[in-house]
Image 1 (cartoon, helix red, strand yellow):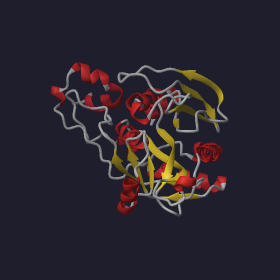
Image 2 (cartoon, rainbow, N blue to C red; image 1 turned 90 degrees about the vertical axis):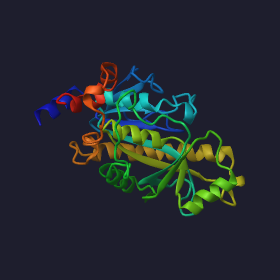
Image 3 (cartoon, rainbow, N blue to C red; image 1 turned 90 degrees about the horizontal axis):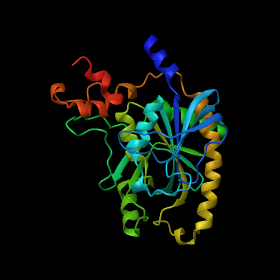
Length: 298
């Protein structure tokens, strides 16, 4: 316990917040400062805004940069998550604008999904390789503790929320064709977005708890009224969703337990299968922050 408390006291943040489309800052952060971080995997999307929110140390990152300069496929997901790890973050709350694939998931509703379906192509979603093989368990991609925290936070904020469902992560940047949208509905998918899958995989490899708050902005093109939706309407929903998200996140930060009892913090304990003697010094150094504790005694 002493070493855990020591690490926590050295951490610059304990909870990470990732803002998506329409959410480029986090209201209410006090004593804030900006920090640009260098990682072995390149530069994160933006500077991390570090400070205190609801008496907890937090780090906020704008996924697409505060000027929304980055397409989903251009985001350096590895650098973003590694940067949170360097800051000492143990939990990440990720906010994402999504399209709805169900009639009952209406614009302005919030969804806390419990599954992913991958439709991306060629995105890097692992820290490993270069002579080090590790295979995490990903059957249940979200932290159950954080899911419950978000559910309670939405209830407190009196925001309509749906728990469970599958987030289909597509490549983008173009939206779906009508045929694709209808197929996704036939497959039983619930919401569609372009970013969160890679974050979740990398967070699991970094042994960081991760949860998604999916903010519905529109029905995907399957819906008969889709063509009547204007860009201005979608932008309005983005802004209103962001207002609700600020309320929800503040409550979630306050409600998140100080200690972790979930399995996220030991996700790599049995994931590394490479003979330790075969791992090069360069690779060891590159991912020491992630796996150093598992390699010392081997």
